[in-house]
Length: 281
Image 1 (cartoon, rainbow, N blue to C red):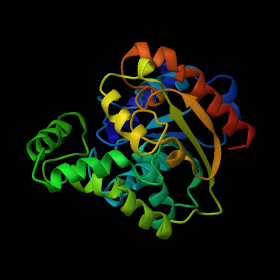
Image 2 (spheres, rainbow, N blue to C red):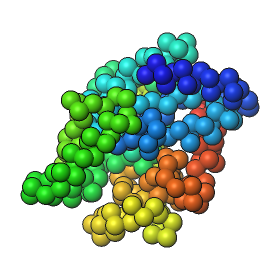
Image 3 (cartoon, rainbow, N blue to C red):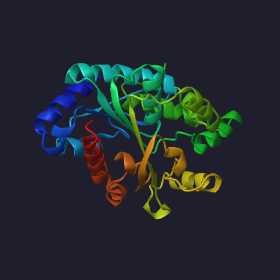
């Protein structure tokens, strides 16, 4: 965490404040999704873009694979560190995928409604992710367990919050399942002190990362239009702001540059900051 804050400090020196950053009351914290980290599948490209345009941005790192509650605990520590470092009264959280669920838990269950001005979720499976149910079926049948363990071990190499002792991909998938998210939504309510915004994303097979294509077909057959992982309507929460023409990786500023260019994620995040500015956040 200290390393991330140091990186953010030097980024602010080399990418000084300009235009719309002056109108943001509170700094922005970007929160990554499942199996992401400081260097792999992070939101660092989105952070870089916003810093170049003067936004004070912090790039959080939470447990790569674990329960929503465990990841939210990591996020709470990070929010506290950012508030101390920035001397701000609150933060604006912009969260991709599972990071949006961690953030909702943070606000509702950990009592951070007085520290979070807004929560914007991007391609977050608020009503569960059918791909998680499908993977769990494989695991419950005794298949793919070796692959799951390999992914867990790999995640410890690029995520400083993740160790062999705390990593748990099976639990993460269980929390993302349709049934568990139904329970989650009944107990994790919105805080009226926080502004909740959401975006979904969709992509055609030709404009989607190859890794996502087979999953996307499964999701489409079972639920409908999606971005390769998350069905469109599942991403709607709070005030729905619209749908980006991006796959699940690209909307987070990740994946191959070819698909990020098609996605135009840079304008997406600049426009998002302008929206937060217009709301005096």
